[in-house]
Length: 470
Image: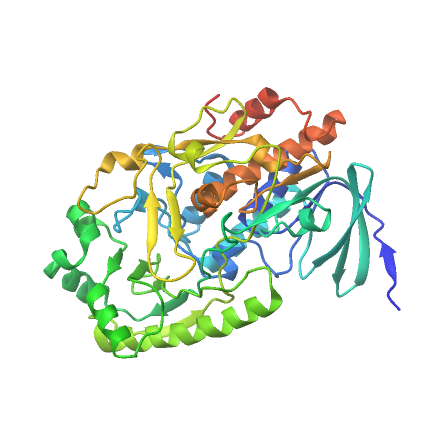
């Protein structure tokens, strides 16, 4: 028999999900006076950056202009001060202007500190299993953990699950994957390797720059940056696939050196035709991802200069998911909004990351920067593309159905293409801060999340360090 017990504590704001957006939503809500609980299924904050081996953070910038600041920048400065990050460095892949490498273990520590300093209550290893509603409001979450099954009451709820788990259980409509066929971007099992001879690797790349098309955009970046990131070895990769050594349905290899010399994150595996909201699909993806990483490691040691003595630190720990469900909110952000930088009067964040779509069905990756309106081509590259950025409106985080639910993170109301632009972690810090600040404002004034004063929200965000163009 299942017994559900009521938690003695009730909260102003409950955040379901401790990834980047959820952690910053909780911090912001608490800093603005709310009594906050944040829950997560893992034993640490950080989501894809700590649980899926993603790195570096891409990007806080649009060209030379930093358009994501606030609590996210506070986090970066703490990482730098503690020696866990070199800060913002030039992107030698020439995809965007700056990236932010970091230590995943250091990030766990810094986020622990920021959440606890803000005064949040935390429950790790806790799973959302149900929600309870009364008319147009959520009243409580039902969770499962080592204490059993508990009911937790709150006033405003924030879904930061990444997959709209809370919203879906509350009956909020959603779009699964691509509108035409429900196909989702591939999942990726990242692999971290160490013991790479970075000097030999850099020399090999610079010796034949014509084999690395993105280098032709600005070879000086590759020559001068201390931390090496690039895309390439396409011919070798293709040959290995033809020989049956590689089964990864991808066209190139992504190399991202971390802040530790000789340590690289390999963002190359590609798991297609599986769902990140299916237990069976995730299980298959985990296993296939590890198989692909083993293939990739053997390929690197055999074929790539500098990798001869490299060793695998770990895969994952879990497979990375780019997108699944998108709620259908009060407003749906579109690719046209991103590409044309639509002038939303309700903007609560900005981003300079381009539309970045990994083919759901196999090889190929499409990238389109704001104000470019065409796929980024190596031969027609214009560095001015990095300077463009776009506004993100508040209405993509709220629903028509419920008065006290805010949705943040990659599962906000956005088209397949628009989500491919706003899904990266720096942007998540910005919209998370906005979500938490809005939730605290709704509690303070006893308002629906759909009725809060947006100019007041924007002013609060600006006063607390966010970059907002009103």
